[in-house]
Amino acid sequence: MRSFGLLLFVALAIVLVPGAVSWSKEGHMITCRIAQNLLKPEAAHAVKQLLPENVNGDLSALCVWPDQIRHWYKYRWTSPLHFIDTPDDACTFDHSRICTLGDCVKDRCVAGAIQNFTSQLSHYKEGSTDRRYNLTEALLFLSHFMGDIHQPLHVGFTSDEGGNTIDLRWFRHKSNLHHVWDREIILQALKDYYDKDVDLLQQAIEGNFTDGLWHDDLLSWRDCDDLLECPNKYAVESITIACKWGYKGVKEGQTLSDEYFESRMPIVMRRIAQGGVRLAMYLNALFADPDNEQAAAIFASPT
Ligand SMILES: *[C@@H]1O[C@H](CO)[C@@H](O)[C@H](O)[C@H]1NC(C)=O
Ligand SMILES: *[C@@H]1O[C@H](CO)[C@@H](O)[C@H](O)[C@H]1NC(C)=O
Ligand SMILES: *[C@@H]1O[C@H](CO)[C@@H](O)[C@H](O)[C@H]1NC(C)=O
Image (cartoon, rainbow, N blue to C red; front, side, top):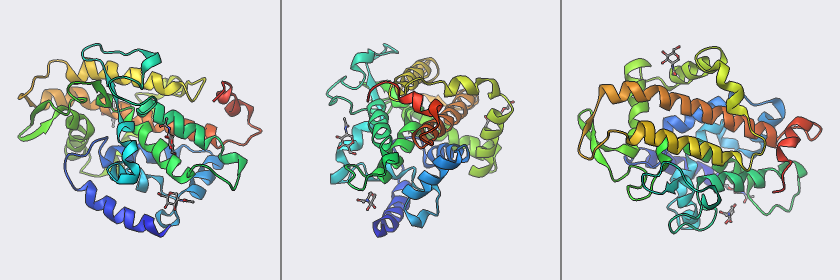
């Protein structure tokens, strides 16, 4: 457990380096806080049990951990788990080959990763002491990748690496299309509308699904018959948005400013909300009381 303290320290240092490669630290933190606020008692308890003591039960403190370790030798295999490369301009992909496109090893993509860590965590309740997998890590990976799969440009075209090679300007500074969706839009929103206060933004997002803009969508967001299949659906949503709102009309070298920002911000906020709500749905199902048949039914199909 002590290594987590060091990890957190290294984490903070790395987060300050520009060019991060997933929802910004803010995006992941908000996703995880939304989720944690929606946990039922059994799930809240399990999450606390799995988290290292030094974060005091705060999942969001470690939601960026998978970004920090992805280049470490031991975790290098996790690097391709953050995204899906889809065929250029197709705006969709073949489901049966979802994680085998390009030179990707089977299931080494963000949808496969969610499946993998979901099925690992489904054994938590057995309470076996001889555990094959580290379920603390599984929780952190699942929480992080549920965020990433909702970032539209994490399910982007292969040749431009999900917009990473599309260099452009964001208002007055250099950026790239991927980074605009990871971070720039969120930071701009924080600056323009939320006094740079992440808590205020989180509350605004929560307000919009508890009784507001998205309240009527909540049921459909949570709709999932099979926790292992639903990530495919989330990935399709992302590539669809990436085409319609991310790539559309954007050219290398261009300057993106107010118009792009104002029209895309609501989409980013909605994706963060969906990621949080769905992460909670997963954790509530995974850690539900075994007597809760409704939650158990989500595992109806074989793993
Ligand atoms: C699980 O992983 C965490 C983070 O890598 C580590 O700190 C902890 O020691 C691991 N637990 C076990 C039982 O290996
Ligand atoms: C699933 O996760 C484990 C580590 O927890 C890893 O060893 C294994 O390769 C992963 N499977 C896939 C298909 O990525
Ligand atoms: C919440 O909804 C209102 C419209 O009802 C919108 O103006 C605002 O931008 C939304 N906030 C977030 C964070 O989505």
